[in-house]
Image 1 (cartoon, rainbow, N blue to C red):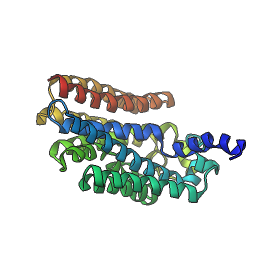
Image 2: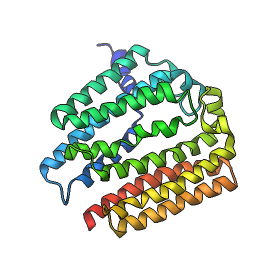
Image 3: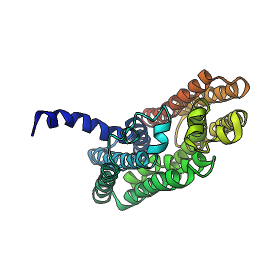
Image 4: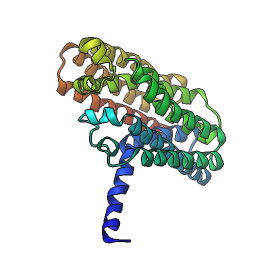
Length: 298
């Protein structure tokens, strides 16, 4: 192999890796891991740790496949938006065939891993999530309706359910509560982003809510969703999944999110929308981390 070919390998690897949207997939796997941990009473044994590790890898592979397929379908849209114009598919660094083959390989590898070494239920749920995000949301809903992120949010809310199924081979009400929290968190999270990226979305032709219904209506929806999300975040405590440690974190975080939503509704600025978007990431991460701490401390 020539020196030029050898030097091209790291660059090519980074291009394929970028297709998997690493930061998004990390959050997906983290949420799935929370579902796994909560599904196992007490401290996990070696078998539980090994099963969780394999399940995380399988979910990561399929989630990465869905992200790569999304990059393929939306390469034209990505090229028009500053936030996504750097992606290898948008820049033409990877061909459609390469991207599709990469996505198919990741999905196949992850599905086999989950079916053989975890359980068929987890594999089918994970594959259904792939179809929901990569096909139903990306291909059908996103260009069709401003409610795309609400309906399509069901796919993004699945990770804790996948994690729960991996450890128990069933889907319990606890997993559905975690699903509901992420489902209600998704609209205010993405609409905060869409508010300060509205011109990007307008150029792309996507019917995001700030484009179709305006800033004021979108900000009201963000506020209303943060209030509804507040109620959902109390459900783990009300159902007996957690104790006062989680409840305290959930109340503080939810008040903070509602405060951002209210401030955004009353006095809009791009800077405030950015802060709201960033806080939404902190909200979900710390909320689930509190569930994890609560599970082991008490």
